[in-house]
Image 1: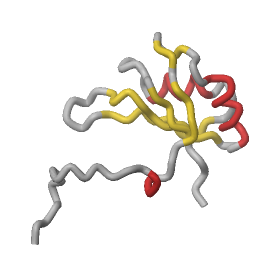
Image 2 (image 1 turned 120 degrees about the horizontal axis):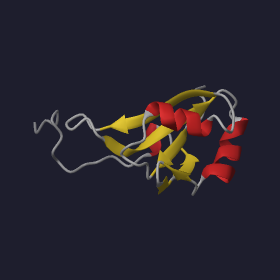
Image 3 (image 1 turned 45 degrees about the horizontal axis):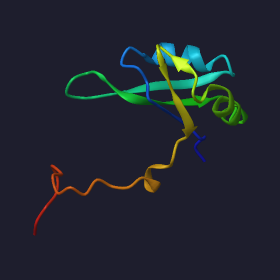
Image 4 (image 1 turned 45 degrees about the vertical axis):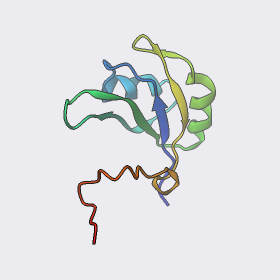
Length: 100
């Protein structure tokens, strides 16, 4: 089973993978920290994901870092929802959508 990631919202556009990782390493060992980037512009989408080596640090990070300031903005820290739990965007504009 894959380990549980944290969802980090309201990130400043200046936040990088490295600065996100460094911020969360105050809680414990971080195995991955990723700021999601827009493919078109190459700019941050304002959110990212963090994964700890020890999942017990997830609760600690939520309690201690949710609402704290990172790169000048208060961030939101919560457990990431699995992909299948997220609502799908069914706006009809999908590139691969077929009509037959």
